[in-house]
Length: 467
Image (cartoon, rainbow, N blue to C red):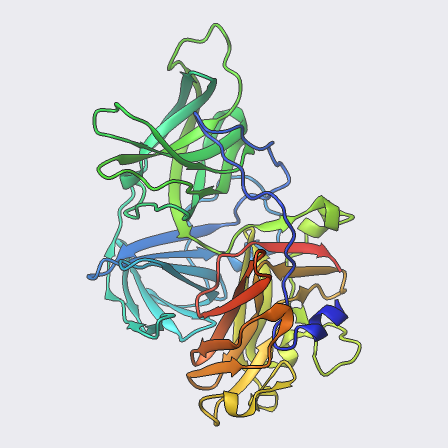
């Protein structure tokens, strides 16, 4: 690892290991993946969805800090009221296209929540109607700013009880129940989106292979379009679980979309079509984010003790480029204010303050000099590798296709003309004031890496491996 890091100069190449992504599930879909009973259910959380006057959607999920490191049961939690130091994820689905995501911690004052993460602070006003206002300025990747202001909360329709009924089709069968997606969220999926839903309820029958899928239909039901499905999970009794759906197709114009709850098991031969097989009471489903940082992957081939690895939640250590041995040290060594990297609800949540002044350097990044290639000579930079470790240095957490995090004291453009690894072209990267993610793509045909920047936490898969 050390030699790889040194060789890449400015950027640390993330592990690019070919593994299968989330499998499909649901009626009429390809064969689903085996049930994974190791995944923990959601800790206590609440979700708010609202829309601004320009047509942008805002989804805020707040997760109980006290539940993060506790032994999480599958019991469905009651309605939750945010508390100080809870964890938030804010997703913005932009009317013009694209999404923007940030995460961090919550401070509560009356009916307001202050969100502090890797960008500017935002203040959210919550009423009995939902999320009514967001005060603050958000800088998007194109350099434009967004000031949300007053919002119109969404009002999801929660049927008190649903039934899963026999469904048979040409080459398969299962139990399922469909909900019009417009009753759940105002956000319409697009091809290549990843929709994450939290589902709660109490089932009277164990669902051995529960999953969600998105399906599109014309008003007269004369056609069928499968959009995508989630992984499978075993649910029994009272449950609270989050599923993620990969959207593989663009919904046809004019088609409405059903969110389908499935149990992908064989149906008794004696069962009649649409016969009730299970009843779920106290049912609730919420969209908690779109294109969020992806589920953490625990590959058997890279972990000796998968069960132990899944219990690790705190990866708030990294290495110091000035240390020849590169022994992991607390991120707080370099950062003023919050300095944590945690796995929460199968997502990676970063909460970073600002680099300490002694680590901000002019024209230097990851130990390499850039001199006149920085367009603003007064700009100071700090690079944080995106290889994170547990305190005992036993496990490493790394994102796919992410090279690092860079903090810039001012807006600038970072260039380097002598970055020639794998015959790469010169690097030109716009950096916004504050934290920037450096991502890359790789073209096998040309053997070239192409880098880009974003202020939104990218939706790349993260992987836990033995260190």
